Every structure is written in C-alpha cells, then in structure tokens.
Image (cartoon, rainbow, N blue to C red; front, side, top):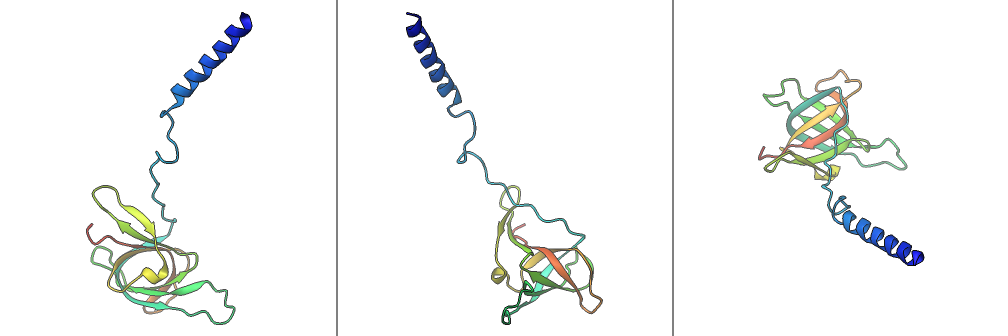
Length: 146
C-alpha cells in the first residue's frame, strides 16, 4: 500500500507542477520583440539626405565601403554639411514612431533615398574638407509622422 501511495503522490505532484506552470512563464510567442539599440557615437547630425553615392566594388576590394551620403543639417541640428562614409559596419535603420515609442527596423544601403530626413551618428576623425567627412556609426531614417 505504501508503493501505491508513493505513486499517487508522485502523480499528483507532477499534475500540480504541470498546472501551476501553464501560462505563468512567458514563452517565445509571449515575449515582445525588443527594438535594437543604436551604437554609441561621439556626435550626431540630423537633416535631409541631399546626395547618395553607391560605390561599386573593384575586383577583390575588401574596404567595406558601400557608399557615401551628404547630409545638410536641419535648423534643430545646427552645423555644417557633412559627407559620411557608409561601410559594412554602419548600422542602418528606419524609424517608425507610431502611437507610442519609436521602433527601429533594419534596412539596407539601397533603401536610402534623397530628401529623407536622417539622423547620423559618427565617431572617430573628421577629415578637414568642405564639406567635412567622417565615417557613420549609424543612420536612422526619421519617421515623417513624428
């Protein structure tokens, strides 16, 4: 009779643990996707993309340079126009503000078009020229509705 009680107690314990665990812990379908975060940068500039130049790779070029963008600063982001190198390490996002917090979705260099307002984050040396030149850490296309 003790073996039967032990078996029943074990089955009851398993059933209770199974019922208690149902729907309590979030599974992969229950979690909200997290918005990616922007890399740390030393400076930012926001304004319209005035010119976009794509670079065609020559031979076995491993420079990682995809192209350049020229950005004119907006009134809210004073400064001079700058040309940014876009490399294979530059993070490119499209922002959607919606009704709540903004969401970022990853895009490719070919998705950039002129006249779109973008925020560009950059670090490292700024080459002394006019317009100034630097390498972009990230580019975020601003949501026109925000």
